[in-house]
Length: 274
Image (cartoon, rainbow, N blue to C red; front, side, top):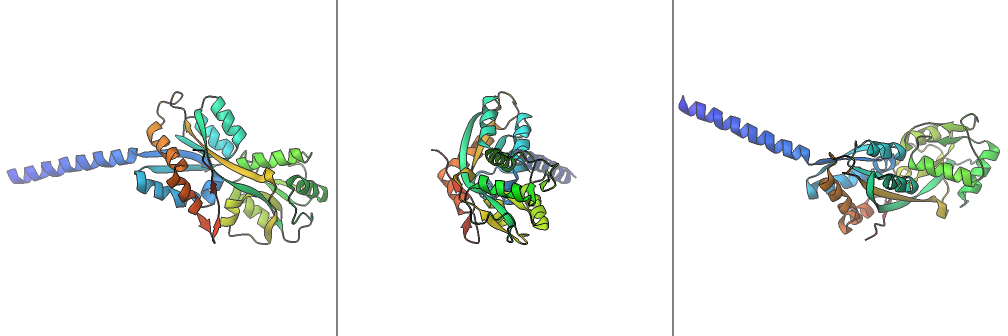
């Protein structure tokens, strides 16, 4: 009897110890609000297991448009924000929601369209001229219209082209969706769309779409990462969040980002400032 009681007590204590260990393990995680392109391009699926293996920290990603990702940070519902709209990121820091922005990597935007190319923009390198031709021919154009980094860039290019498109115009279609679903819409409608190269390279449902405009310096697409300010939100996991940022901008993290390729083509180019 005494032996069975002792065994029961040992089993109970072991269970408590295991539960305590599991609780500590569960606590070693962070929430990262990020743009859809980092997820839908497959980058996070590639780099996060490597980071977890190295540090034991699990990264839970909330992938939305950049504007929404920053708003999640403003509510204190994320520990780290990883997005691609530099003016909006700098404003985030100025407002005190982070104390520092770190540059991580870049790629570029590209203008996708049907191979038949009714607006005759193929082979051009000036994004604003291409948009002017699309508007002039009223060829279908698909806009994410989701306050993402890509949408913000698209609006800058329309403004530079001297055009203010609107959903009231039949040729301008607003989806309010992420990059992948918006590309699906463009594929179904044989329409033009601005996309980030990373998501395009991982996109399988291309239909009759192809890259028509690329190489304009204005299409440069920079990504930045920020730790949400602990002074505003005391629950932010500063240590683990900063560890993730430090790894992203370290030589190891930068090498891992550079090594992510699809069909031999590199999707993101690390450029963290040392």
